[in-house]
Image (cartoon, rainbow over all chains, first blue to last red; front, side, top):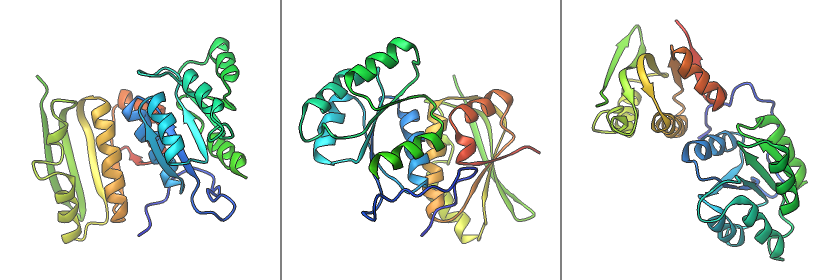
Length: 140
Length: 111
């Protein structure tokens, strides 16, 4: 049964080269932010799984095999910088597009994220159209 | 101590859940009454309601528990093709909805 349409958003395809819904792993410790972004993406047709910290994110990236990773930076247990480093160091996950979603938007944060290996940096809450375009482009 | 009153009513075919008080960690479980959102959804389906209006006019406090509650309800009600309309959030709450992009998920009406 279809869900009610998402309002105000441009219709952009969430399909990745005919392989079914794009799988997005969202690593974020704030439940309400995680639920909101996940819901917005689900309504656009993405399959979303989540982890509550960097360590869980690494484990899920290996077992669930997402096509894109969205990563918060400041989290308990393991922060986003270390998680990105580990994902990049592992041949099984080194290829994954990783987009940082952070409430902190200073030049220092952006530079450190890029040095860790992040592909894109979005300030929370992200512009959803821009995020969706980046996800779709990354899995083309 | 927080308090929440949730009152479901029907007028001219419009089903409205009016919330008065606070939705936070102490009260969020009261929002759908003891039976939970599924029971409310089933009730609305039995009476063939075409939507649920949630009247927020008299909400005093609304924290992350309330936001999560709305998101979960949206997920559940959308599967049943029953839209939720949020009515009259105050300026603070409306700003929160915009920041969290709830205005992209829910219809928000002011009357």
